[in-house]
Amino acid sequence: GSRDEKPDPQAQEALAPLQEAMRLEGENPASLMAVGQALFALGRRDEALRTWTRSLRIDPNQPDLQSIVNQLSPTPVSP
Image 1: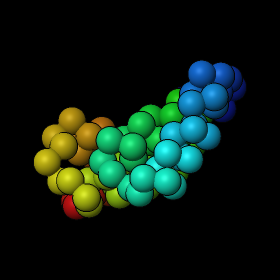
Image 2 (image 1 turned 90 degrees about the vertical axis):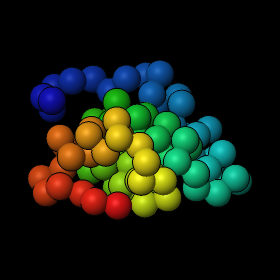
Image 3 (image 1 turned 45 degrees about the vertical axis):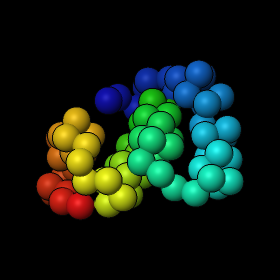
Image 4 (image 1 turned 30 degrees about the horizontal axis):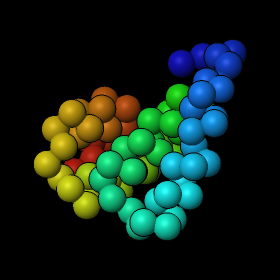
């Protein structure tokens, strides 16, 4: 993506409540996936990758997410 892209305002609005829910409920694959999607939409790719990698460590049986992480990561990530 280009640096000129504007962050997604819906992603910005969604990020704080998602992070709060994760803080209260603990990390789980679904919440990590959602936070990662919001971060990615905001152009925060590295943070999104780290978040998605944590999701895969908890539940490695997420082939779609594994594929996304492998495409975006400079080196393949295995849980």
